[in-house]
Image (cartoon, rainbow, N blue to C red; front, side, top):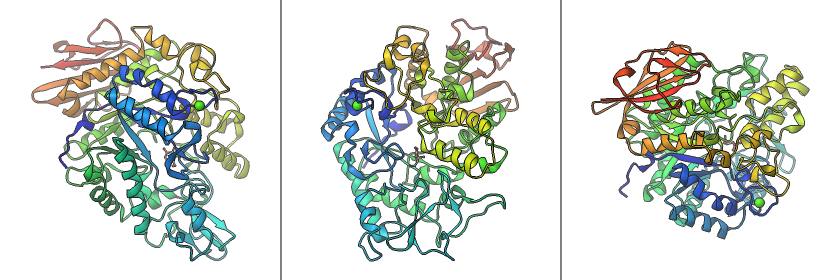
Length: 557
Ligand code: GLC
Ligand code: CA
């Protein structure tokens, strides 16, 4: 069917339903809650909502362990609540993009329950089962959530593969029946009228033939499974089949989450003739500043160096230009809060810094994603005790690195968790300064960030200088500018450790974007005197002068 590139001109707003709005006071966000907040999202100016999983799930990984793809999790409401949400979103001109989690299911899914019964069960081959090797796991892969990727099952004396938690067995995409099941799930939702899919860890679905050991250092217990599995040899083929059998029949938007992908991979999947996906979520910039001890991976508390950040984002901008399409994001439900991670949440600068980050990212080429609360400048929660955490990735990491292997002391690990935990993103949305921030009148499933009395949507909507209205203006600028959507990208002074400046060029016009990533007063001249100021986070313009976290955008004709 004929397709337009509306997804290139769109801005996506991500909703983590569990933490967005509770409607029935059980402390858990839900679909009617979201429905009641759609006008707010519309007011911001977003075009598409990406909804994290709302399907039936035992919730071991907050919905990323699905036990029934065609039904709604009780806590989130009913299918008719979903239909109503979709209808209202569409009536407001908002599109809904669903999360498609098909690298794995829950161990409670009917397919897995059958699969584990016996070696000759018709569903056996829906998952990846292997005999022990010398009484051990079949290979040396380590799970994303710590420990081995293999779990022994007594009933049949074999191991099953789980790249994530034990409760998330990997589907066997080599089996054509599995692929047909997935196409049918996709059609079920597309025929309801949803507008696209964000595909969870989709570049992990094709496992290497023979499942060989991955490379690992002597002091590492397990091999990095991402390196061993990502971008497998049949991935293109599977995605093309998905396109041919499903996606090509609908005018929808797709974004594939792809840990460990390179720009070259992304061009393959999102390239103009590839017939696979519209864009991918790459991880390079969010994986910056890992721990020096590679065994600890992402767990660290060092800030990102601006030059590295510029190099990373610029590489993706340059390499995909004209060949693929970027997605632009600072944070999501798996990442700490943008303002805390990439700038500062010091109350003195928070609002300016949040606007500065928004400007820097949203003026790039690609489709911007705003994570719930980012438009308020919501911050990390800064936990100090292990008991405050909820996320299984964080808890497993603490257990493995502090309790079991003793490779890091307790205080350092608590500091790393505070900086990087996914829980930072998952504290409930801050709507107002009433009890529980207007998120629920019950007991919230997860403690709120106590700063909600200051940082909340109501305060933002009442303040014309808020991050909210600034984001609204950024989005509006994009909606009215082909230069912002299509222009190509040129980074300026890449080795400047304090300022992130770049230009965009399109049909003889130039956009100049300048952001001061420090709290110092600086001076830089990129020719902004000849430009017209389109937006800036100080109300007056001091041209070559850059104040703390100042960011400004000029049009040069
Ligand atoms: C993705 C999701 C994350 C989840 C994991 C396993 O990375 O974004 O939240 O835990 O996949 O499904
Ligand atoms: Ca609820």
